[in-house]
Amino acid sequence: MTTDAKYFDDLVQARRSVRIYDQEQEFDHNAVQRSLERATLSPNSSNMQMWEFYRISSDALKKEVAENCMKQKAATTARELVLFVVRPSLWKDRTAFNLDKMKSSFPEEMEDKDKNRALSYYQKLIPILYNNDKLGVRSVFKKLYSWYVGTKRPMVRQVTKTDVRVTLHKSVSLAAMTFMYSMKAEGYDTCPMEGFDSKRLKKLLDLPKDAEISMIIGCGPAGEGGVYNDRVRVPNQEVIFER
Ligand SMILES: Cc1cc2nc3c(=O)[nH]c(=O)nc-3n(C[C@H](O)[C@H](O)[C@H](O)COP(=O)(O)O)c2cc1C
Image (cartoon, rainbow, N blue to C red; front, side):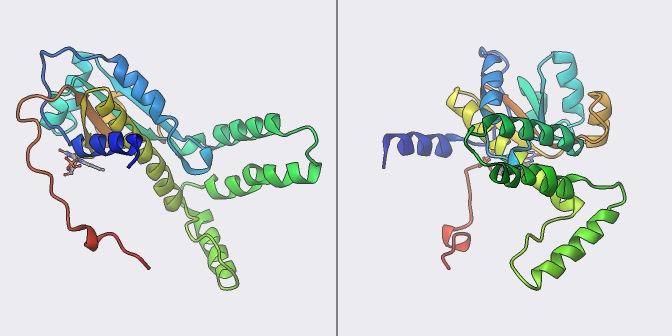
């Protein structure tokens, strides 16, 4: 095992969901900022980065947010709470961002036809996938198209509005994981939560209409009894397969 693998293994073994945080120990809030900046480097679908991270550190707001996390101790005692949010409506901005970056990175000698082929991913494919109507009518056509093409050759099947939402939540979850390992490496603990009232929280925090809160992560120095139980997992052979 390399030194890096050993270090990473220690981190993975040590991370637990901590539900009680110490209120006295010093907590470096800059560790949250550093960890979020690392989280933005996580892999994400088509590099669309349709995520946002909201830090809640003031005592007054933390209290209100924790109320809406069903008063879970992981939230009421957290020294800071971070919302991991997805924004389906950001697709146009992010497409433009990626197109700009791509255009400015083409080598001078690259032929126009090769440039156009590369650009068509963000100019054609991404808009087809991400441009969805409220009722999901376009999804029906996309699904039918995908099914039809799929009868003739391998074809991406996850093409509906719901599939895009899943994609966004997948990507932000990877960012959440990077964040949690980074916090552990900074010497702090975390607890991911999905037990919250998303509707009330969106209103309280004045989040954009399309925002979906994927996860809320409580963090800080672990308090006594913060780990509720021994870690249990189903046996590896029940989940790791070779085909
Ligand atoms: C998507 C997601 C949602 C979770 N929601 C909650 C939650 O609302 N409250 C909580 O106490 N733990 C929550 N957890 C933590 C899990 O219960 C925990 O990760 C699991 O029991 C394994 O324990 P470990 O993290 O200590 O290894 C959540 C974890 C994930 C990944």
